[in-house]
Amino acid sequence: MTIKIEKKITGYNVVTPEDKAKEAAAVEAAAKQAAQAKAEIIQLGEPLSRPDILIGNTYKIKTPVTEHALYITINDVIMNEGTPQEHRRPFEIFINSKNMDHFQWIVALTRVMSAVFRKGGDVTFLVEELKSVFEPSGGYYKRGGKFVPSLVAEIGEVLENHLIQIGMLKRPGLDEHQQSLVDQKKAEYLEKHSISEEEITTDGFPKGAQLCNKCSTKAVVVMDNCLTCLNCGDSKCG
Image (cartoon, rainbow, N blue to C red; front, side):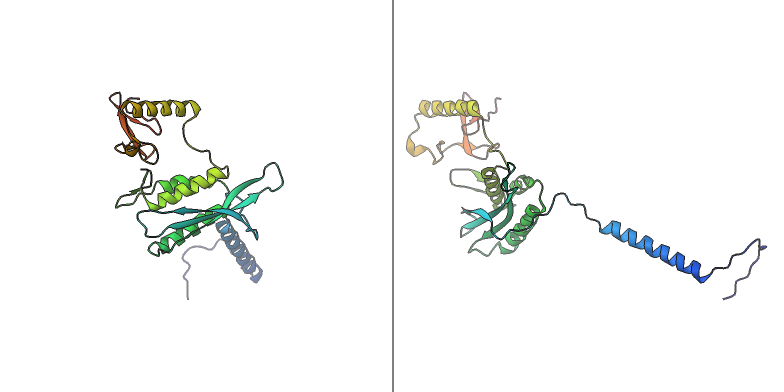
């Protein structure tokens, strides 16, 4: 290809094979550095390796949306064993059932949860994430009148109870004085309205009670012209 030079030449430089080699080496080094920076992964916590033996608990849940019960197994790993900082944390989760309707998403959910467990760090956020999942067709009531928005939310409750048992979460609820006041109000209501044992649910609340938006329990009654929950003490009147 012929190139016509229309301007006056003021200087020139001959490119040697050595110069071409240096330029190629510089381009290759820059490409390697860029690829290394792109591939660098920042770990939020040290990944956990699986011991040969794990300890854990299995929980059985029976819901109206599944024909057969679900068995949820959560295995824990012992961290800093033999030291004052020894504690248990979840390592993996399995869900088994005769019902195959939800098989695919349950397998996917347990694998993702197990991966989060093994990543290390704080895993308690999974509880709220799972409990906030709502079934589009509506949830269901557990035995005792507690409302559950979805099967995923009930799995979240099982995880919450497990984390409480191993000390990673504190048990939610009222303190000693608040619980004493709620129990007193509950006893007063049952006595005042002469409610018999046949009119009380297995959890000890009147069968005609409404659902509490705060604790999701059918324990809301009218006390002193105000809707009051006999389970958590929540009141529309403050």
